[in-house]
Amino acid sequence: MRRLDLRPLQAELAPWGLITLSHIESRVMESLDAVIANLEAICDTENPGANRPGPDAFGRGARLLKENTDAVFGPPPAGRWTRILVTLSPKAGKNIDHVRALFRAGMDCVRINCARDSENVWASMIDNVRRVADEMGRPCRVLMDLAGPKIRTRTVIAPKKGAVQAGDRILLTRETPAGNPEFAFQTDCSIPDVLRQIAVGAKVSIRDGLIAGHVEAVRDDGVVMAIDRTPPGGYPLEVQRGINFPGSELDVSPLSEADLSALDFVAAHADIVSYSFVQRPEDIARLQDEVAARRAGWPRMPIVAKVETQHAFANLPEMIVQAAGGNPFAVMIARGDLAVEIGYERLSEVQEEILWLCEAAHVPVIWATQVLESLAKRGMPSRGEFTDAAMAERAECVMLNKSKYVEEGITVLDNVLRRMEAHTLKRSAQLRPLTSWGRLSET
Image 1 (cartoon, rainbow, N blue to C red):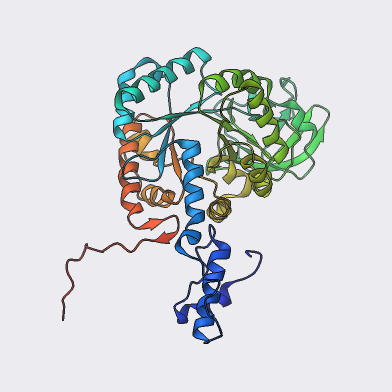
Image 2 (image 1 turned 135 degrees about the vertical axis):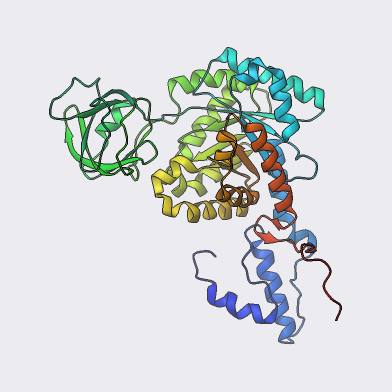
């Protein structure tokens, strides 16, 4: 239905007081049947409204979404529908009082990043979370995030105090750079094989787009990146910074050897596994097989697919079909890498489309990356952050990253979500009484 331009039809339905089809993702056929039944009644046709759906049929999609959300994240907290997922720091494994504080602030689920720390640290974090959950009589599911094939800079050669500027060139090499005098800036790539798959003209982004350019030349030892854009004054080329190739379909397995090793621990100790840089339904099937092999006889493990590339976004319908038929399933809008891949100006539009699609498929969504980041990192929020946090209520879960003031971030997010849920359910307005301006005059 959404392949059609429905705007003229919406405008014609509105004056008749009919559903304008703007919030029908979870109940498409029921909404169309309701509109047809009302038109039949208006036109005084024979046997009007014969196919009008009842309340149970009309609410079936919302009930399925709730069931699927509970299957992934567990039951919701009292008085709030949207869950709060918090990334743990190693402090959570050393200081159980820190974990208690996160629980009291309103944390519902925890995330452990497998790209960092070790199995001993992960085990300590999980042990403290389980203990506090038992103390407080509240469930708290543990999500472990497989690192995936994140492409990063490694050894860097650059002028002292020199920043990359528009017009400069960077030599990206497969091996450790040898100090070619032709290039002031050089770095090798953590996944060297991708440089063999990149063509002249391909877009390249380093450090979330702070250094952006294109492939000017392909060489035996790597590729030459011509810089098109940096912040005013330039930006330094640093080690362990992410490299993206927006628009290039790379043949890289989303499950590395390190991921498979970590998956042994994840399958035995976590409640949810999160899948980084997944791009195709075949990738989902691979993880399903790997998890099933490690959990024979156990309940099916919920899987979270992180949408962080153009190809993951394009293939999302097929990935949903593959995943939801075999495991409890959710989607994370990983807005950092996704913004670099698709362009920042498209991010708001794309995250809306992901929310629509997932609601139609009754799949829960995690709203992630930089939520209340200024507050959580520096203790001082920006005004725009509150609008973003309020918009996040349309997802089933919101993720906060580890930071110095994460407890304050959880408390504020809990407050914002509770307030907004009185006003909206997904994208549908909830018409609670407005009390901000007092009682209206009866005259």
